[in-house]
Image (cartoon, rainbow, N blue to C red; front, side, top):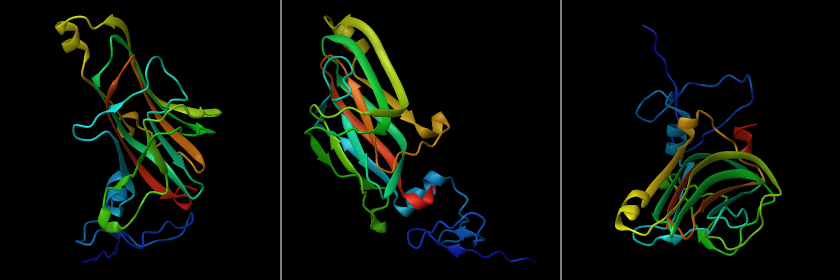
Length: 224
């Protein structure tokens, strides 16, 4: 009877070798073969990070008016040492303002600089792994610098309805509302970086609410 053995790896000594190099079968410490999807394995390594702009009952104010590419509602600056892969974005509007014009956009590119805002510390999916994000994340940014080059518009979902919220019925029909994007639904893992930026925009006439953004962060060598 054949015996298959592998090397247990879950949080430490995770390596990515060159093309064509033979490696041992990888498994978790309980013997589970490491054939889970990439996101699950990254999560166990502690390489998936979550950013929250607004938590609990403390909501944040989104960019007012039509879409303004200098007014980032969440800005992630990726340094030269790593790349990130956006995994999930949720935007929850608690209020819209008096006119229902809304645009939600996720962009990646270069040359973007966050304006004055709230520093956000990304939290690891496995804090026992002792990893921290190398990215600089800022929420609720005042006027900053727009992308000089937009590589890709990763996601856009809008509700372009000019409706005055003048009655209780209108308020019930149009707010609150949750918008969601996931990489699994899109079928594509988009690499951002090195030395690029990723930004979330949640524009409304006078909107506020919450943003949750999850991304995997890897050394550049893992995607070369």
